[in-house]
Amino acid sequence: MTQLPRAIGDQAEDQALQHLEQQGLTLITRNFQIRRGEIDLIMQHADELVFVEVRARSNTAYGDGIESITRSKRQRLIAAASAYLQRQRYDMPARFDVVAIDGQGQINWIADAFRADD
Image 1 (cartoon, rainbow, N blue to C red):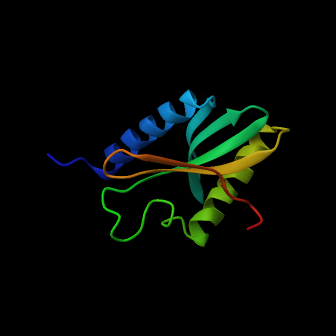
Image 2 (cartoon, rainbow, N blue to C red):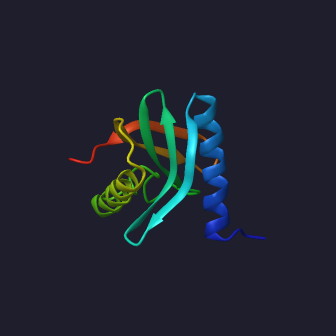
C-alpha cells in the first residue's frame, strides 16, 4: 500500500523533529500556516529562532530536497516567518534551516540554509 503525500510529509517531519531535538533544538510549533505559505517546524536553538523546511525525496533523479527549494518557495517561507514573528513578537535572531531526507532515510540538515535577504 502506498502512502499519501501528506502521510509521507508527516513521517518526514517526525523524523526531522527527532533528529533536531537530538541536536539540542526545542520545538515551539509545527505546521504554522498563513495563506501564502507554511513553515513545517519552528524551533529554538540556544538564543535563535529556527524556521525549518523539511523536504523528503524518495528519488533524487530530479534533484535532492534542498535543490527543490526554489526562490518562490523561499519567498513563501519568508512571508510565513514574518507573519509568525509579528504575531508572536519574538525578540531574538532567526534563521532558516532545511532538513532533507532521502529515500533511504538519510538526513541532511543544513543550518542557516538561506537568509531573508537572499
